[in-house]
Every structure is written in structure tokens, then in C-alpha cells.
Length: 154
Image (tube, rainbow, N blue to C red; front, side, top):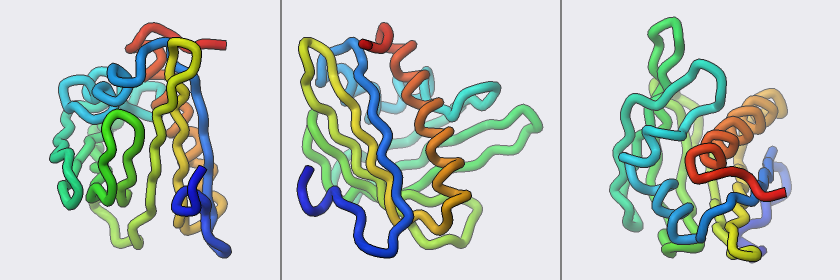
């Protein structure tokens, strides 16, 4: 972990890890290509991802839709601060519509015995309650990614 991955004093932060049975390049592509994101992204349950847009470059923006059963669609939007394929991404994170300050997400993809350990560091979270919701959401997303790419490695 580098200094840039460590949450700063005063931040509410979260770290979630999962080892996925797939090579690093395949996991990185699934995380960054809209045609893949639409097939696995979401916090779990009945929430699905009907649309995703990714401009994968520093300064490029992304938009990922979360569609809820009641018809409501919440967009997760942000800008890439670092793109280092296939090992690391850093991007801002906020919900649209919304007025909150952007949060920051760092995702590392580390080779591990023929699989990939995905490490999500989500920081600049406004409250403990929001952190707890993000933890559920990231675990749901990583469950979906593992199912999409062939499972989780114990």
C-alpha cells in the first residue's frame, strides 16, 4: 500500500478485499469496460446496471447506473485521477443526483496464485452510516464480479 492509498486523518474510510479466480487483465477489463460492467455491477439483490459509460484515461469521466425495483435510477459518477492498467485505478465518486462532496476510490488488482486480489479503498466518506452502506454495496459488487468471472477463491 502506498501513502496515497492510506486514508488521511479525519476521513471515514473503508477497505474491502476479494480474491477472484481470473487473471489480472481479465478482472481489470471487467471493471473498466461498459459491456462487462453492465453484466455484474450492483450492490446485490434486485438492483441492476442498465447502463455504464467509461472514458478510461486520466481526466476521463465515468457514469454507472444503478436501477432499483421501484424504477428509481441513481448514477454513480466521477473522474479518473490515475489509470495504470491492469493494476490500479483511482477515481472520484459521487451519486447523481446529489450535492455531496466527491469521495475517492482506489482499486488495486494484484496477482495471487493465478487469481486476482481486488482491493477497494473507499475514502472521504461523509459519515459512518454512509460507510456502512458502501461496505454492503462493495461486497455486493464483488459478489457479482466473482460470479461473472468464474468464482471466488477461498
